[in-house]
Image (cartoon, rainbow, N blue to C red):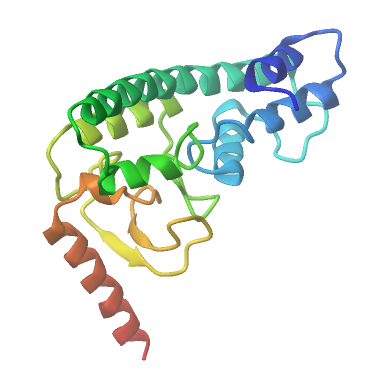
Length: 203
C-alpha cells in the first residue's frame, strides 16, 4: 500500500495522466485528512477551483491542493513528535494511564479527523495548516469556552456523528467537532443544553 509521500510523488509526476494524478491526491486523504476524507476533499476542491467530479483537472491546481495538504501534514507531524516526547516523559515519571486528552489524540493519530466535520460541505475556509495551528494552540492552552478554530460561541452537542467518538460538541460556525479537552466543563454543559433546547423546540 502506497504511503503519503509516494502518492504525493504521483500527483506531481507530469508523466502520469491527469486521472491518475487526481486519484493519487484523493488517496493521500486516506493517509491524512484533517476534516475527514469527504470534507477535506470538498475543502481542497473549493480553495483550488477543482471540480469535485472532474477527472482531468488543471495539474497546477492539483499540485497547489497537494501543497496545502502537505503544509498541514507537516504542522501535525511536528505536533505528534512533541506529543510522543511528552508521553515518554510522563511514562518515565510513572504516569502510565492516559487521560481524556490522550484518548482524543489516540483517535486522531496520523491526522485523520483532527478537526472532524460531520457535514462534508461545512468546514473552515482558511488554509488547513492555519486551522491545525489554531487547534494545536488550543490543545496547549487551558480549556476555553469557544471554538478553537473560528472563535464561534454556538456549540451544539451532536449525538449522531459518523466518526468516533460518535458524539460531541460541534461548532455551528465552522462545522468542526470541537475536541473535549479544549473546552471547559461549563462549555460542554452549555453545548449539551443547546442540543436539548433544539430537541424541545422540534417536539
